[in-house]
Image 1: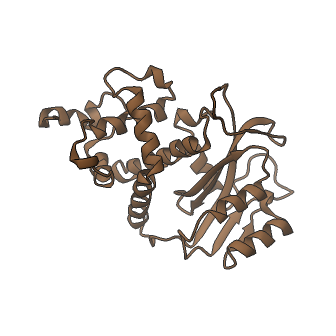
Image 2 (image 1 turned 60 degrees about the horizontal axis):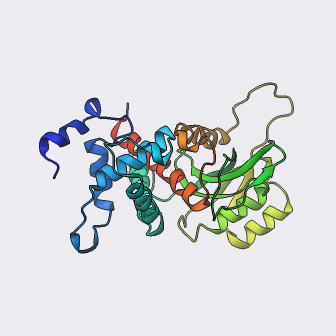
Length: 277
């Protein structure tokens, strides 16, 4: 059992690791985690969440988890379970709505920005490995993270696929898996990788009410130029990349890579809600 004295160390100034959840952050997450079978859970789920956040933040190997956190098998199994049973999705959605309300916006967005990030694959091995690809444009062999964010830069949806899939094809895969999650979405901002009749035709089939606007770089521009709307999704990618687990594609399975990406977004929203400064 965790006494009030032990819980006191979860104040931000008394945390063991910077990745640990504070009392305020845990108060937002705890009600969204389902109870154990028969309410006989012997594992402290707060420590489990601290453990997976430690891996996410530091990028350490599973076998290198500190001894004062739960065993790697426990952390791995819980992360696998939460990605399967929808726990991460529920936590993410609840925090997203709170962030939108805090920003004085409607819960469901009307505009979004789409982009992708190619990530180099690390050396890996095992009986089950999802295939990677080669992004000839960026000269990267690995996976591609396709993300959709709102105008605040908060993650709406994401998928992981091989890097050799073109942006226009990956974008359709991303948008076709929304399944009506954001019914008021009317405007989509994208870069030149999503232009063309093929993308327009596929988009008209899956989301006929969604209007796309291609934000192009001026031919007269020299050096770095901030492009309208597109800077929002680039900033989100930079935010997520603060988590060292996302620096490379370390995961054998795409769904596990997606779980860490969603966990990074949860971490970001918790910090926004509980640490406004």
